[in-house]
Image (cartoon, rainbow, N blue to C red; front, side):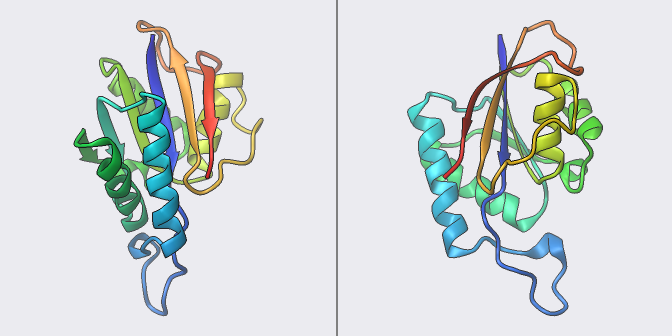
Length: 158
């Protein structure tokens, strides 16, 4: 079995006048949430083998806080994650099929719709992946990433 971990960025500050959405930083609350997410992953022995992260500042800061707890992990910024559809995210996951435990750090609605699509086969079935929420999905090693192929093995939020 391989695992896909979906981590939504933690709470971010609102955009300042003239500030682009992609440049919004984590709030103090968000930093605490991200550190808690890292502790949960560490305590559940769910340290990823590889991370794909949106280039948005809030996702990068979430990942930095998580890695501050779990330690260094191979990581790549993946521009396609920002504002991604579930189909785009599924394609990224499928492109990394060789990774035993892959972590995607991104945004809603894409992450929660991907979790629903992989688990139930319907992207609109679930709503409710809160900031810093984590969904862990298990897939067979040889399984292509397609609707209904995964089991939801854990769900956590701060």
